[in-house]
Length: 233
Image 1 (cartoon, rainbow, N blue to C red):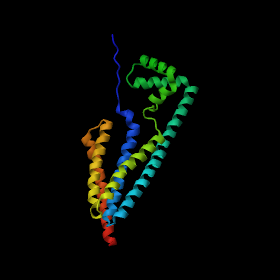
Image 2: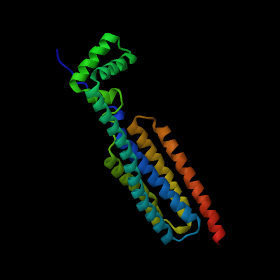
Image 3: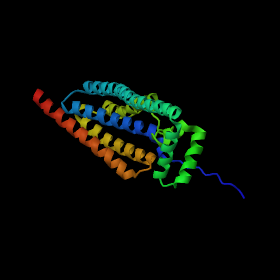
Image 4: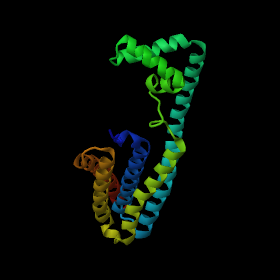
């Protein structure tokens, strides 16, 4: 009787990098496009628009990296603190921890005898990893990685932000707002669709929700730029 290999690819395995990538690229496109559209709507020249876009790209990428690193580092600190406490409890009160693990499996639907046997076997194999996964919800798949998240956020922000900057570079100053907005809508729709596909969700739904909020952000900043541009004039 032949044995067939069974391999599955689950979307949750991508959650670490996918979240940071989609968030970074979306922020890069939306924030830089909004900045460019707002500055252009205020009546600025091509040089001012380009400088504003480049400044937004650099500042945004650094801000995203720093913010993501601090945020994920805080999560890592919390996870490490929980693991240290769990390790101490396993050393000091192993019977209570075994009972706690058994009850977890009972609550998940196993009968008492089977739950106890499973708890004993998994504890003998790797008690800390078992409690981390089944009690604390911490596993290798979803473990926080600060440096990875920071780098992905910075790079994806820059890759998204470069789109409106390049469009602004080749657009006439008096039409920059309209052209950048149009390219941004298309870019956001593509990004939303790709993010939804990578995450296993509906393409249309992903594209619509990303595009809507991006269009709203650009509309608001364009209105602000127009108001202040008229006032300054």
